[in-house]
Image (cartoon, rainbow, N blue to C red):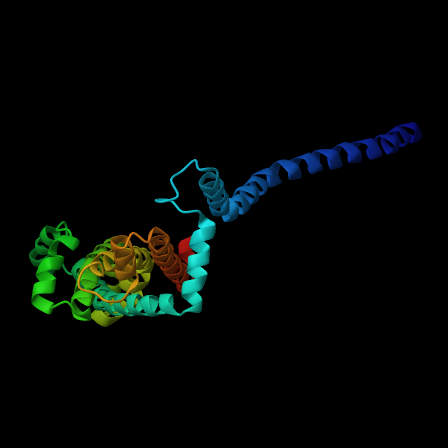
Length: 285
């Protein structure tokens, strides 16, 4: 009996060592995907810098035509000089003001129209086909008509942005409302909930993830539209700056405008994403 216990006592340290080794290997195996994900995430932060570096080297070596693709160092120098002279801020302010007003003019009606038609069948059967027929019309194609009606001032810029934003917000909100489980609406009706309660407590929270998707698409589209709208009938704005630089063949300044509007769109989408994380934390899962 004592011999058996002695043998068992001698075997336990070896078994514990094997178990510890297996546990370490298992932990390493489980950590491997997270380690790879961290590596790729860190690389994604620097990948734009790699592209800029290759661009700079190619331009300096003459592998690309500097007349059409000036090196990033020259673009950065022009960018800084325009910041110091405050010229760039004047164009940025004009563009942001037009985008903000046009975005609100289109997003708010699109939001409520999407919720309303998503909840009620009869209005959807009447209004839905009309919106479906108008949506495919290119927004830039009707810009001459809008300029004819509203003139070349800022109102025409507001209207063309609002039209583009409206449809994106409408369809994303409508899709979010239509995905609300029917049992939620049935329970609300059986408990005597009124339309306002159905809207605020069921339809709107359920559609929030889709609504934020619509906000991101609308924000990006707003900058695309305003850049094209400012080509015509504008004396300020990033789009006007890009167009005037093209007319004078100031390629470096033109790239400054392109980079600027790209940064404005990126910062706007980042802001909306931060708001989404606060308002709809469950959407990330």
